[in-house]
Structures are given as C-alpha cells and as structure tokens.
Amino acid sequence: MSDDNEPQLLPDVDDPVAAPFWSAAREGRLVVQRCDGCGALRWPPLVGCPDCRSREATWIAAATTGVVWSYATYHRALHRAFAADVPYSIAVVDLDGGPRITARVADPDDRLRVGAPVVVSFERITDEITIPRWTLH
Ligand SMILES: [Zn+2]
Image 1 (cartoon, rainbow, N blue to C red):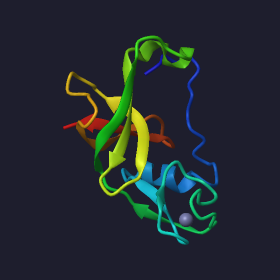
Image 2: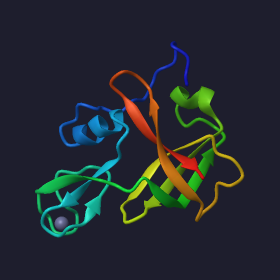
Image 3: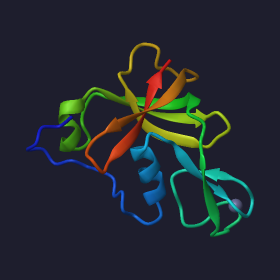
C-alpha cells in the first residue's frame, strides 16, 4: 500500500456500468456480464456486447480459478501512486469457462508463469473498495 501522502488510483465503484462488479467484489464474489443476446461472457464491464451489439446483459458468478495467459512484473512504477509497491505483477488470466480478466498478483513468486494456475482473492482497500487479486496455487 501507498502511504497516506501518496495519491491513490482507485476504481470508480459508483460507475453505473461497473457498479455490480465492485459491489460483488466487496462481498468477496467475482461476477462478469453474460450477454443476453449471444451468451458471451465479458470483462471489463461494458454497456453493450462487442460481439453482437446487444445492450442487454446479466451479471453471473464467474469461476474463481483460471490460468495465467500473460503477465508483467513492474520494477519501475508507471505512476507515483504505485512507487511503494514495486516490484509488483499484473496477470491476464483465462478464467475457467471465461472470460479473460486482468488483475494484480498477490504475493507473486517464481511460480508465476504463463499457464500457472491461480485462484481469485480479494484485497479490501477501503470500506467501499475491494479489488480482486490473483493468488498462485
Ligand atoms: Zn452478445
């Protein structure tokens, strides 16, 4: 975590499109949108389906496990809000059953590689903001 004097880059949990995602995360649940038109799962939350253009979607529970599709480890902070956090790793994960979600890796170690199995965990940042993380397992 950054100290109190550093700026924080936090998600807008009141954004009407993404609010259900953040509300579920606060409860320790991972949810994604399933298009009512074509059934595609999507993340990040969007107003419309990029595949069929339907604007109707239903929030469903996503798998809590997946495998690393790609990752990067940051040794230099790209924003000063993250200066105290380096090095840290971000992984793009193919959830079992989809979709593909990007999040920080909690406590990365030498097991972090493409194809590594992960499980979602949740980091409570404030009373309102809880952010999904990947934990290697
Ligand atoms: Zn669709």
